[in-house]
Amino acid sequence: MSETPRADDPTQPTGAPPTPGRAPQEAPSTREPAASRRDHDEDPLRGSRTSGLWVTMVVVGVLIVLLVVFTLQNTQPVDLAFLGWEGRTPLSAAILIAAAAGILITALAGSLRILQLRRRVKRQGR
Image (spheres, rainbow, N blue to C red):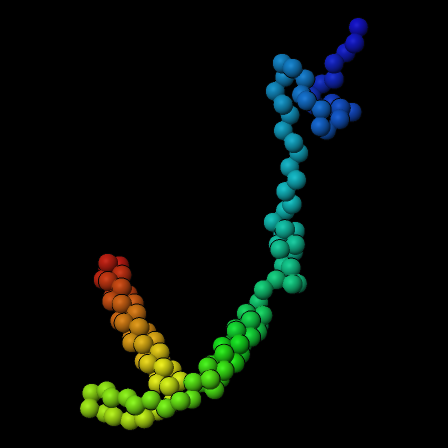
């Protein structure tokens, strides 16, 4: 008479199906202690503030090169008039000044909204 292997039998192959009529045996925990896991998580090649700064500097450098190319390709002078001010300036300077003004106005509006939300949160916290 042939004997069927038990589910908890260490000689039974790992990938073998459990014996019918028995609950499947839970696999042994492969989790490492927290301290040991922490050592593995500290990958020496992980991102850092320095690597983030390096990426930022590369992006800023590329943007500056693009701005220089834009400025050199758009040197033709244009006449401008704004609220009674009149003048003549290179096209690239006029566009860059307008873009900078738009960024500043957007940043001001965003800052005011952040201050408003902070006050609201502070009031609700009381």
